[in-house]
Each structure stands twice: as C-alpha cells, then as structure tokens.
Length: 112
Length: 113
Image 1 (spheres, chains in turn blue, orange):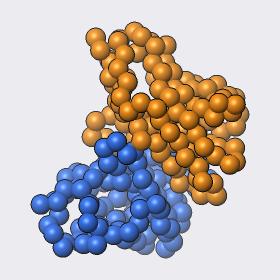
Image 2 (cartoon, chains in turn yellow, blue):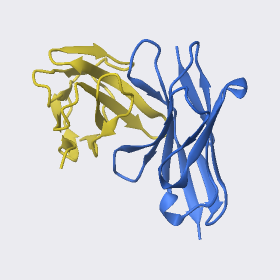
Image 3 (cartoon, chains in turn blue, red):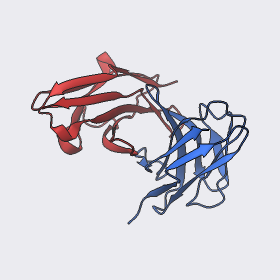
C-alpha cells in the first residue's frame, strides 16, 4: 500500500540532545512537508521541500534542520537550539502543483 | 499573507443534529481553501477543497462547505451528525506564491448520544 511512514511514534529527548524524526513516502510525490502541532495552535509549517536537494524554511524553522537527499525521504532533526520541542510532528507529501496533502500518523516528541 | 480563523475551538452537538464549523479567511488573491479532519493520534485527511470552481463543495462522509466571497467564509456543514464524526477539524488556505498550506487552529467536534 502507498503511504507515508513516520517513525518513531514516540520519541524522548534529553537536554542538549539532537534527535531525528524519520519520514518516508512511497507515493512518488515530489513535495514533502514538516508541520508541528501544539494544542490549540493548529499546525505550523517548519520546512518544506518541492524537489530533491532543495528545501525552504517555513514559519517556525529555528531550531530545526532537514535534508532531502532522496525523493522518498525527508528527515527532520530537532536540535538542542529548539528550546521547546515537545509537540506532535506531522510529515506530509503532495504531488507538485496539487494542494492535497497526504499525512503520516505523526511522532510525539517529549523532553525528559 | 493568507490566513484562516476558525471560530470556536470546541463544538458539541447531539447525534442527528446539524454540524456547523466556522472558518473565515484572509487573502489578497483568490484563495484555495480546504477542510481536513484529524482523528486521535493520527495524521490529517482531506475532507474537501475549493479551487474556484463551484462555490458549494461536497466532500467525503456527507460534509460540504460553501465558499462565500462577500463574507470571506468557508464554513463546513453536515446535516446530521454521527458519533463517528467526533474529531478535530482544520480549515486551511494556500499561501500566496507557495503551495504549502496555512492551517487554522482547529475545532474539536464532540457528538453526544
């Protein structure tokens, strides 16, 4: 079945630690996105990528980094510079030029 | 810049009652508007989208939304609520010049038996 796979489902970060969230899709979509979800604030865009080896900052990119070395993969690193990382992180993908997003099931990141 | 405002963070209806979830948008250009639904601990699923064709858009699970330019609104409705409709609903709009969506803060729908 085609879809988006996010792993792990739950992740814990220690102070000063970088952690990486995985996002893989087999939908052959060119565009991929990372959103952060906090209660009562909806989804906020962190980074997005329209094509391999290219990505743009979203609204809240500080403290995060991404790479897009392969079409099917768009990992997100939460760095130690992100002082409030506890949130639900959602990865999505789409066909370029189509605003319909396909979402993964999310990763809940918490700080120990 | 484009944005959406969802009025009411929580809405509670009785099973069989009308569902009305409100969304107003702000856009300097004709917008593309969307409604997504999120069930607990899951990602979002597209319910419906408006892309400047018919102003009344029908989506999945009996939901529909009407684009009203004069009111800058795109409210989501369903004639008769089911227990399975309990979820969080997000209105979204495209950002001018970019295809990444801007989401509203969400409305949690509760359906009482």
